[in-house]
Image (cartoon, rainbow, N blue to C red; front, side, top):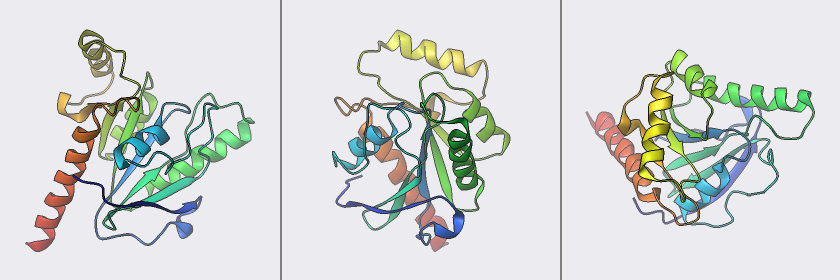
Length: 194
């Protein structure tokens, strides 16, 4: 898939503020604070400053919508976990994220992982489709990748093709993610034509 255009549309907290759905499904990215969601979005769209990045965990506090090729949204969900913010604020981010994930919008959730299982278990429990993206993989050997997969399989059932490995430093894995998104959009178009 070639990304010709990507633009920030709006930020939202409540469902009434989400942008009008496009005909295609949207692709949401979720993970702990500082796991690299914004860097990943910038990498796959080829726009270095589309999503704001920061070394400080917890910068993404709202749901951010980006329209890609005027066909679908990429959705950047608030990070959760160890950001240095008051507990009340963390709880609010969790509600913001949960509202989106539980919404009826047609979506696939990419879970960015370092070592977090709770989100996978939660999505699995609610039958929400997801794929796993291991981020910051530029210095990880193939043996370490397979060890990560093995550890997760002890806790959640998934297939190896449910997993992507990505590095924002050298864009490794970018094409795999984009090709997967494109395959889903094509499949969706065929279903609508039938």
